[in-house]
View 1 (tube, rainbow, N blue to C red):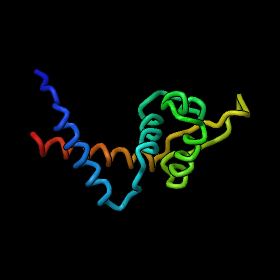
View 2: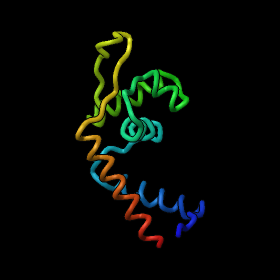
View 3: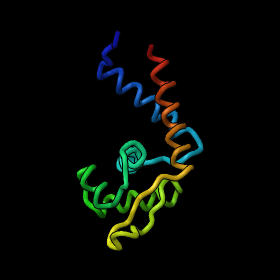
View 4: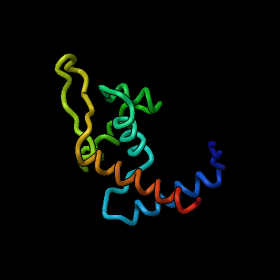
Length: 115
């Protein structure tokens, strides 16, 4: 039996998770940065700047800025594509995996409070 999540409840879960996230001692990501990070971790790769721009429907410079921040935080890493020197591959890191695991736990905890 599945219970449909109402829009107000979904927003409250998101609000609680975000509030918990900004209170912890970790990176405070923008929606664009989080979207890029989640895409790299949840969608099968390989991931490139061009591919992320297409997937997110934003410009390549906007993706590059988001990746600059994520890279500085060691949540992703970039390396040249050996097969296509014009492309840059975006890869997962242990730090990024840990960050998203902790964020997922915040969402789960926020959802449990509403039940």
